[in-house]
Image (cartoon, rainbow, N blue to C red; front, side, top):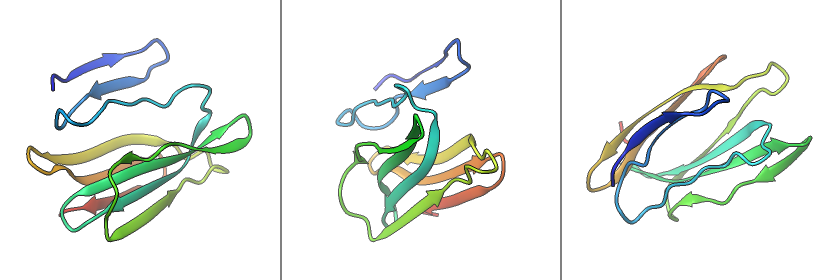
Length: 118
């Protein structure tokens, strides 16, 4: 899978896709105001899936689940909407055979993770 990096007029920077050829690239931007929650399912060595709860026009909207099933651990990141918490960085590790093995998310207020393999 060939990866690329680009920036949009609204300042969104995209990178990827990365990973195996069996996955698919995705993007959730249509009318989304902000991310309220992230649901992370992971095992001892890999991230199994991600799902998002978005704030859109004052209501919460659950995304589809990205990734597979399974995972013995499940974490929810609840962003502090009152203090305008938002994601400023994402870091992870990818293994050519196993896919995404570790994920850490940083905001203007805190750091969450790492999740998955250490």
